[in-house]
Length: 263
Image (cartoon, helix red, strand yellow):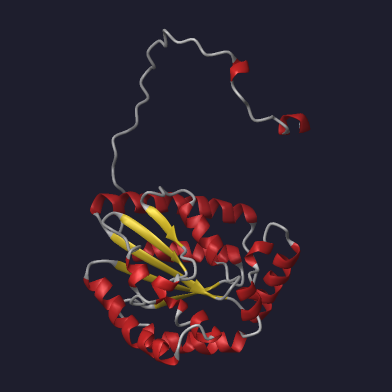
């Protein structure tokens, strides 16, 4: 498949990010509630897409939730309890970078939950999501699909890139050995949770730039936003600044301008 040229990608991404800001303002204005779930294999490109969605948006309106492993106390709670605390209020967009689907994926494959806990998740998850939708929340679920060959290429790149080695956790390295197990877990999860009220949308992510643009375009198409008109911002002439004398520069500690020496 031919890859999009960098210039075309940057131009389209900039256009889509302007639309995302319009969406954000509409959500704030109308009190709409949006929860977006990003799931998929390790190195499938979820994080990069989330970053492009949020980088131009107001973090007070659009927030990313990426929960760590549950504490002992959280393990004793109703499974969905710790996720409920992060669901959107009116005028908010919450993006879950991994979600309650941990139980259907990594917990299932790695043996972190019992068979009965897994079965109960499969029974209760569709009802939980239907309840969210009935409450007026818009729930959008994306699964990022990456081929075995492309995932391995990205793992190898992370192994040699000092800025990305942190992404190769012991869990990632272990999951690399269980491609088929994760495939079966995903198929079972889809069979139970690909529901009419909150279907799964699969993003082909072998080409990261294509995946980002396709996902953002699709997201915008799902929400019936309109541009909210705001009065134009007028920067009035500043009044004269009087009665202030800046303290001596030597009284302050400045960060060394080491990069200025490199020019």
